Length: 91
Image (cartoon, rainbow, N blue to C red; front, side):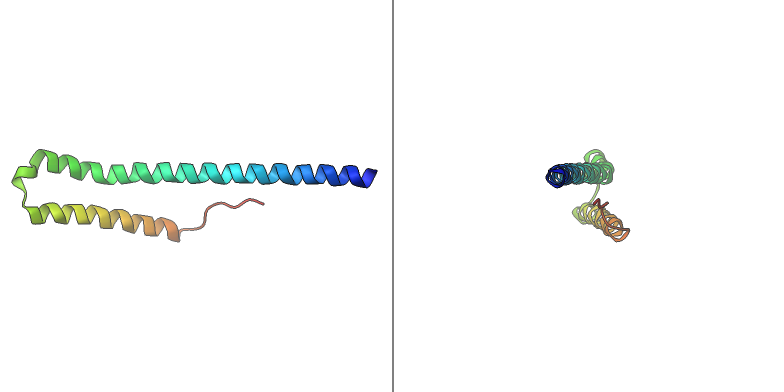
């Protein structure tokens, strides 16, 4: 009987740990997604504001260069972030 009780408690504990791990990983994913979305907005918004204010004064080549530069810079930042380590792991 004692062994059965220990097994039930152990199974319950394992399930609880697994549920917590899944919840934590989901929260980390959501937080990272929100952070990257905010970062992209922060990278793009100054360029968009500049083009909105001065768009009629810039050539289409310059406009395209600005858009590509922001996109490349943001992509390079994401590459650096991926190289700095892995997401936290529990368990």
